[in-house]
Image (cartoon, rainbow, N blue to C red):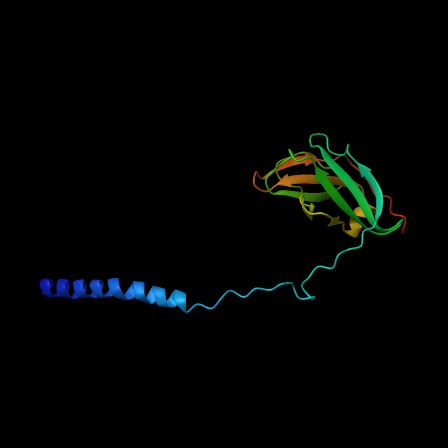
Length: 163
């Protein structure tokens, strides 16, 4: 009885040894090509925000990091704000994210509960929520890879003339 089962299993495994590579080759040959799109549909493409007015620029907001901060606005003295962060080539931190924290912020390992994600540090422009123009707060540079706060800016408040 055991001998007949062994013969049966041996035949099955030899058959599978021939059948599976052939089936794999046929499956790979029969695949459809991956669809490619030259551009996103208009509904999915982000509309570029026309931030044309440079409100101010500072290099002294971050004490530990050599980061330049440029505050931009849609129009001269009116409209929404955006921030542009830049640094030298040697300033490299893994997966650096930019957060806005209203009120006072300290350099602690966990992010404060009310932190608002603005975007990645490598982004060209980070549009700011309307609440940023109405309250004082800090920018926080947070490294996702290290799971730590890299630096916290000095407290500042944007001058919103549309109140």
